[in-house]
Picture (cartoon, one colour):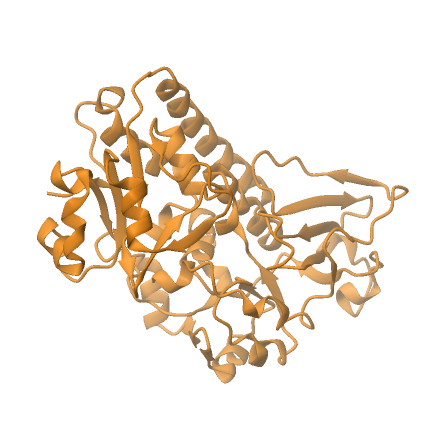
Length: 391
């Protein structure tokens, strides 16, 4: 499942340019004279929405981290609602939209999702009926999705780099939600002519920014109101807890990740996890890093985090993870202060629906971390959902 969220396979951003009409970043095709209403967004930086007088919504999508070297194009969709079609016999083709926008007739009734993060949006919005294809079911917990796969209502289209085009076509998706920075395999999909819709929530720098992408999905599937209401509740709970934590003067230090393939992928200071550490009342050791994440050598990580109070680890370990397993994977791990003091914060994705829930529920994740960093600020009988100290 880790591959669903790797940020460094960026070469495919340009492969599917034909499927979505794209223009250079910052060129949306709108002019100052356009009569439109801007949809208010509080935390998400990767998309904007303008509603025209005829009800068409213009959705502009760009890299939330504004890295034009990695993603030099933005994406533009004109969401044409059924009531805007009038007597048009050919659907959205008769509706005029600004140049550079790909028309999508909404609400979308059939789609394929590529990641658990994307799926979490549909789960939160009670919209499994719209999902007709997924990449796989490894580490999948949701019973309803599993049943739909078993019954043939949702097809498994293969993994990135090895998609089954025939299965994709058989699912009859109107759009396919993708992640532009993934490993690839979109060449075959773009040749089908199906509209590819990028979902960049995972690149947001604030946990609530990532969660706010449920509004983006809601626009496509006719669940705007539900997404607004759900997000408001999540935001309220998250901010109330963050405000309570902000009153404390004691802030432990924390670092994240572990060695894989000779390198340590470290969460950057612009990553939403770094922000969550701050909101949970901890100082992240790479807070000054200006990236979403960066691979560094072990020696560099040790020099930075040797005396950090806590060590956060998320992996898919077969069985019960332990300090012995952590030491076996890299003997030098026992040198960290957090290891010695048994302050490793751990979540096993094989045992929890982490990526199926946390992208849209940062409030739950935040409470887990606060319970570790500042246990006096949560209920005495609090039961963690994902993270707890490794025993």
